[in-house]
Length: 331
Image 1 (cartoon, one colour):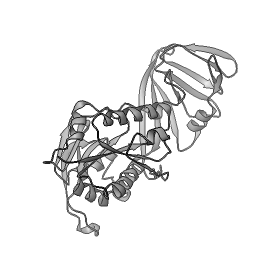
Image 2 (spheres, one colour):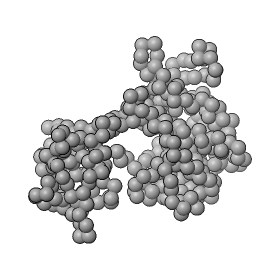
Image 3 (spheres, helix red, strand yellow):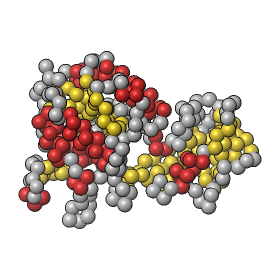
Image 4 (spheres, helix red, strand yellow):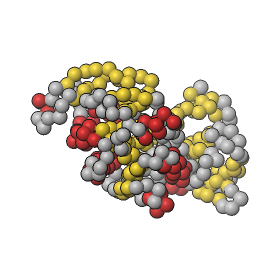
């Protein structure tokens, strides 16, 4: 039986994310497997005590917006204006930080006595089929992964690693997207992938200026298919579209602040679990039970029985140039 080290990739900067991380670790402990946790921000000692190894590396080399950006968006129906609203945010590509965690984990983990190395996202839903794969890795494949989406990708396959770029042999092929959230990799393959991981490669363009890889999953797919992969049941994430929710206090409601225009903002409240109250512009008080769009907002306070909370930090976050936000009504 092959032994396996599970590497958890994490950046848990809110209480809900921390809660989900603990749930993931507890799920892994149910199959009695060794765990290495990686993070670009500190985690509490009680979480460190739950795992066998812990890597804290604050560098977090996220790819700069000028080099590559990602768009996150969502659509919500809003009752008080009787139409749907599109939320959109342009943000840096975090794959550079994920790659950094994989590289650091490989540098330490490959010196340990394991046959296989797995890495998973901190917020994945580990079903019985995934836990079974982790606890008893199949020796007949190089990599066990799962499908990231419903579409197929045509991408570049690197057949061998060469120091001279012109010597690389490549062809074009079609494949399922391989997920970055669930992978079990044999030691020799993990060592090769460690040498191949490169931000420069990920950002590379062809002679016409077109990117080889539009998303991280396309790049990861090109690496997976250097080896003999097997796809298992698609894995789901518990934390989704967190960039579109700027309420980090609790899970009673979600809030999205539109980018400031001369100090005036649009704020969408959605996924309301129980009635909540706000004071707007030091004047009117609104009580919200359903998705609600508030326009021309200069100041906003969340009114609770214990306190009045002003979302100054969240407003500043939405105003930052690198945090470009737009809110569009769609009739």
